[in-house]
Length: 321
Image (tube, rainbow, N blue to C red; front, side, top):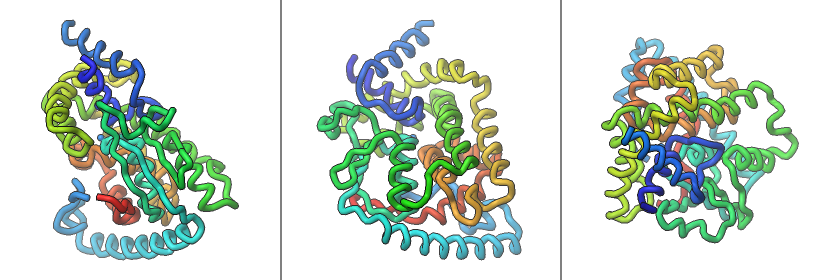
């Protein structure tokens, strides 16, 4: 029973329910109990890649050419940005303790990648949790910067931003602050009802989770099938908790709300991404290979922004395989 408790919580990790992702405590047990009661009663090729940017989004050739020009402009700006960031903030050792599919962990990774801050990844095994036994904080992400522990994705990003730009007041930009709060308070909550919407989607999600997580062979099998079954039922309760009647409509609505917030700009930050752009991008990355992510792009306008973000964030700054 202990193993299944952990598996159900892994789904919670990928869905991003709560302010951080819990590793221990009573939460996994409650989730599996909910599933049991119901049953008796998140560098491979991105999803949005294709032969060309014009083909990818159905653009005309002139539009595709304009998109290429914008890409080069964005890439040049990113190169300068990364160079300045590296000069201002150059820690000796950065280690991220994470779950690969966790949206909050992906938020931190998007920030590190965009700012070209080299980091190591320590994938936490949900069953043993041995990788974070040294810490009193039993959630992920945990970021160690030269042996200093940082926790909670938004707090981690705020602290790193402040160190990179000591003269700025992180969080003072109201628009950026508003949309970062929207990510944590709304966007993450529409993911779970979508990635576990049907039994086949739940199985697809756990196949991705277990393929990218730190599992032994036997743990992977139990996680894939036991976790998928548990989270299929738990997701129904999560829909009710967050007042979601149609999971896909909620996901599409969130995507369109974000595109509307851009007001025609390349990014919310203007010519370059700000912290809100990175937060949305990071949270959506775990579903990029899944059916829900594919359908989100096919049925909303978010694909072009996401592609710009992929170019802006660039290659991963991760230094261990």
